[in-house]
Length: 292
Image 1 (cartoon, rainbow, N blue to C red):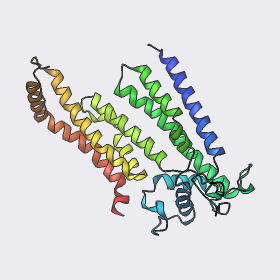
Image 2: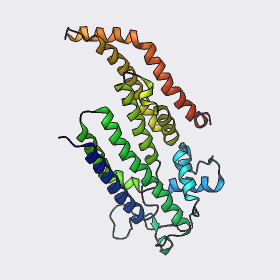
Image 3: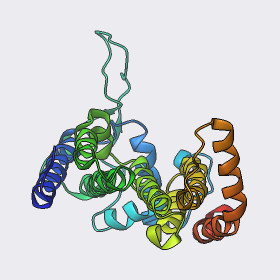
Image 4: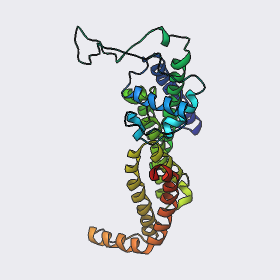
């Protein structure tokens, strides 16, 4: 199936708008603090907004995470009045179905009602930051798939569409959660890694990869899992580019393996150079947090 560029742009824009509407609806309608770990993330955001410093208290459970998401959410929430006064713990919380219990962690009062004010307004502003990040993730997913599978143009739109409407993704997109920052930087980093691979290991094809990897590590340590994947893609790209110059005539897998090995020995300086250009700046970006 072939779609003109103009039609692809219109469809992608429609997907992004639909995601904004759905994630925005979740952010507006889901009672504050009821998403998984949301109140703990909000506590860290409030601390950063008020104290302007990282937390060292073990009681701040999300303080163990790198601060990029929480710090940026704190900047946006500071346009309001970040606070906890509107949050009242529910003494009868019962997640399992029970006639005598209630599923909510908090008692929700008119302090959260529209028009939002005070702490509730700041909380919703932080949620909208998550919506923005997740929308960028959907757009970046399209770019990633276009780079990874350049001939499958419909596949890129399909993948972005599935992500845009994935229920759990949309739900977390409307919550205060650092997964939203990890998702966008992880996707952009993979996009850059595939771009370098497609360019035969040339750094300039995915020049943004170090920034995405570094900021990803400042958003959530688990993004470190992507470093090995991207490193492997870079090396494979340099070897594949070398192999394409002299395609092996013998299809025996032993000869193919031997040819790839020889190509690897010939191209390791280029691969090492690109690896350093990608990972050294990324480490420098994350260095302040890692040293701390």
